[in-house]
Image (cartoon, rainbow, N blue to C red; front, side, top):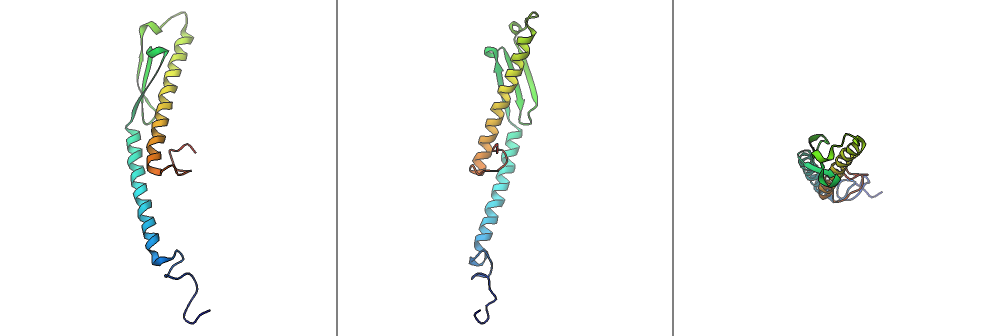
Length: 123
């Protein structure tokens, strides 16, 4: 070993360059974390509508996956075919949930840049 040298990498730390790269990486991580928190807040405030039966059943949900509104047209109510109405309600809810999931993934993807394993990306 050369005189006065204790090993490691030039520049004073194992990341090289005297820590400048590490500091930049930490700033980028902090910025991404702030953007993710903002995106999560925006998602929580989303309201998405789903429908079925040609609009005869409509449901609105918020970003917390809670139903906040349900509208059923009178024509959709057939006492002799309750099963059809139940199916339309389920389909409208599923439609709204799918739209919310897609909107959430798009919003989080804009923050993470599509990095695998990041929250909201469906991995």
